[in-house]
Amino acid sequence: MKRTPLLPAPPLAALALALLGAWMVFFLGQPLGLILGGPCFLTGAGLLLRQGFLQLGSAAQVKSELESENLSLKDRSRHEDRLRQGILVHLREGLVLLGPGKEIRLYNPAAQLLLSSSSRLTLGGSLHGLFREPETLRHIDRAFQGEVTEWTLRRDPRVLRLRAVPFESEDGDPSVLLTLDDITHQEALETTRQKFISNASHELKTPVTSIRIATENLMDGGSVAPGGEGNLKAILRSVDRMTMLLNDISELSRIETGALRLEPMPIQIGVFVPQLLDELRHQAEPRNITLKTLVEPGLERTVIEVDSLRLHQLLENLLSNAIKFSPVGSEVTLRLQRRDPWILWIVQDSGPGIADSDAKRIFERFYRAASTRGVPGTGLGLAIVKHLALLMGGEVSLQSELGRGATFTVKLPLQG
Ligand code: ADP
Image 1: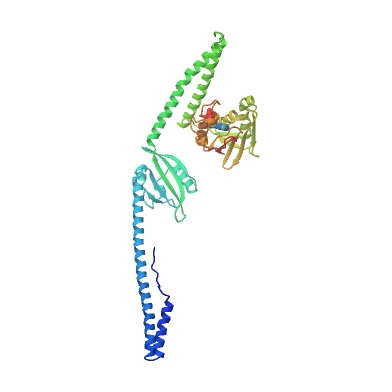
Image 2: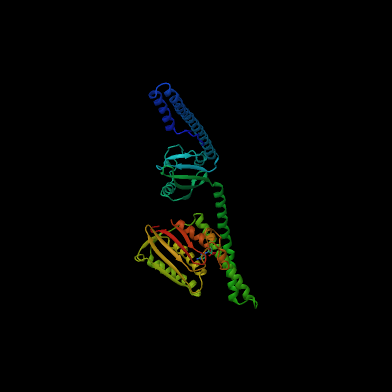
């Protein structure tokens, strides 16, 4: 803002001039005092008055500038409020902002629509009027502790995808922003797709098994034309590959459709781990790979509650990958660490590793990294691992760098 200079001449000089003029009028007497002091006094007083007026004028100008600035700020803030309100009203996603006491601070119409009339949204209302589902309440608690979480909520007739994002409000209070997406349609498609995979793999398994048996009989009976054995072996290899694929597909679809039920039982780590590694030796030995275990002291005697068959399947997938992708003669390590209430199962290899760009998608079905093409596989093993870990109440993560091996960590609850 441009301001007019308030004092064109130093005020003290004007005052001194006026005083000097007055002194001369009084003390020098007439006519000399009037002749010399009069103009001095008038000039000084004039200057002082002028400065006074200037100051008044400039204060009024400043005031009016401030007022118009204030008005334009109010205008802008009203405009931004309207814009924000418009965005909230037109969003298809539901938004709910929870304050530090989990009270509703803000919400949009889509949130009310998606949550249906069973949940009343009112400003200042409680979270418990909105959600009663324990899983949802647990996720929101985790968001208040600083975690970003996502989960699915079924509210007949809708299926919603919820996401809770923690953030600090302007006054530094912890708040959580909930977003709600209607995924009813995608969910229906996904169920149809999974049912199809489940049925198709079931239907295909029988003929594949019949081809295998017939081929084996032919080979055993020796009634094959000379040179035909090579073809039969090729058929067997293809059948084996198809069987592997079908097994993985049907396994994954059983987990994803909820058909697979866990059967937790107490197992002792010191018994389970050696058995698991023994069963993998036939894969490691032909490649001269050493399987090592590093179990934290005291953990061997620990008994955990887990579905041993499924834990075996999960670790077998990770260890088989580590063995098949590692260079001949290298080492694969299974490390166990207790981090109450979790137990960490860590599989480490010194193979080709996984690039960051692949790591993001490596747990997706059928995704295979370009760097490992040529090594047989279905691309379903890690998807099975991920789903099994989730089903067991845990999770799997990957730490890797291209060319520097891969480490998969499975975090599972000590008591399943
Ligand atoms: P598959 O091993 O049958 O291809 P997975 O789902 O088990 O399928 O693995 C998916 C992909 O992840 C693999 O094709 C490979 O590219 C990569 N991968 C998995 N484990 C490792 C590993 N230990 N080292 C390097 N790459 C791996």
